[in-house]
Amino acid sequence: MSNSIQTINPFTEQTLNEYNLMDLQGAENAVNKSNDCFAEWKLVPVKQRIKLANALAEVIEKNRDELVQLMVSEMGKVKSQGESEVTLCANICKYTVNIAEQALANETREYEGGKAIISYQPIGVILGIQPWNFPLYQVIRYSITNLIAGNTTVMKHASNVFGMAEKIQSLYEEAGFPKNAYQSLLIDGKTASALISHQAIKGVTFTGSDKVGKKVAEEAAKRSKKTVLELGSNDAYIVLDDADIQLAIETCVLGRVVNNGQTCVSAKRFIVTESNYDKFKDGFTKAMSQLKTGDPEAEDTDIGPMARKDLREKLHQQVTESIENGASVVCGCEIPEGKGYFYPASILENVTPGMPAYDDELFGPVASLIKAKDNEDAMRIANDSRYGLGGGIFSKDEDKATELAIKHFDTGMVNINGIALSQPNLPFGGVKSSGYGREHGGFGIKEFVNIKSVMVAKNS
Image 1 (cartoon, helix red, strand yellow):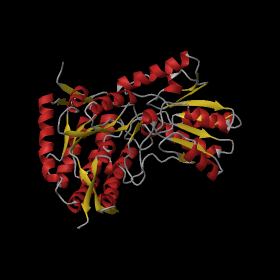
Image 2 (cartoon, one colour; image 1 turned 135 degrees about the vertical axis):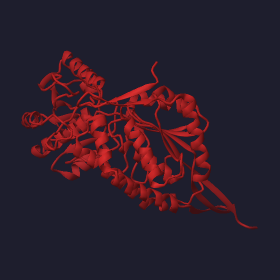
Image 3 (cartoon, helix red, strand yellow; image 1 turned 45 degrees about the vertical axis):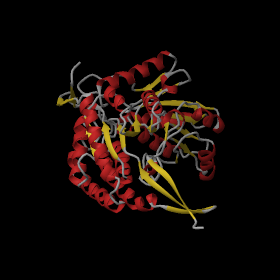
Image 4 (cartoon, one colour; image 1 turned 120 degrees about the vertical axis):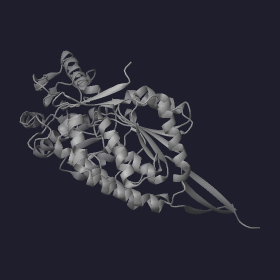
């Protein structure tokens, strides 16, 4: 087996770079160094940690052009969306800085016989296993909160974005974080899995497919180690009887093709009530068909290439299987000729249970269009999924939509009459097979801390 990995530009199909994989012994040595760093880092006052986090925000913004170029060249992200990702990462650092001291401050409570101090103490080295689709954001969102909390981190990135992996480590070092507080390990999945058993690893955070995530959780659970999982989803966006159809069309198109359709928490299943179905279908089809696929660096490109050839092949296999089981092609659904791992904006209808387009996650610009009898049936179909990351509701009755979102939608996040993928001040995460645990909004900073009670008896 080769111990090297090549990164490939999905637009040109040209090799970008070649990286030597770290073996298990090297990875274990890196964890040991991280653990040595933790012994000192955990004692650094929160005030000093947040100064470094502020510095990281500045470094991220200073390196904007290089970071965006890495996203464009390594995984085909549309340039303007790469710029938004950089801004989001800087804002995550700034938000965490603003809430950290209060979130991590000791609390005092009375108890019978004395007073108690509740303290939030770091636990050690946190292993992060992260995907390629948001190659900067996925890493920053977990690592900066854990570092501010006093933990140290080692991270396994996806092999097709190893250039970004190396760059992120350089960002932390440029910001002034101690050596080995954050490390990007160029390792494969097998080595990352083996690290879970390392004594110094105290927790694991994973973003990716539910199949792999469950295996990661199983390995960690065998050793009583906590995990945070952000897994896949087939988010349902519901168009109710009283929806603004034009708004729903515009929002759903954006929600389906953002990041070339390769986003966990994005619109994938479009459930439209019978009274609106034909009008929505016509407008949605026209808008999807008019999107421009092309060079991710071009300003007028709507959809760039998929990140890897094998990912495109998997998507097309899911589409083909759905068609063979009775789904109908509305538009797209064919691999184009020519260079680049492109897949067109596509729509399937007559989508029913038992098809990949209904049951699974289509990680590319393919929409599943489903007709519901009425509002109640639409909500039933939306919840008929093993996933529960995000979703959306379109209705002119905001109060009714809000009640449905809170009481009836089995997801971690719901959009009403719009789409917002990730916000620094709002909790991010899902339920069911979409995982557990929360990041952002001050919640992530306490996922990997020891919530310790110190009871001080009254003097007799």
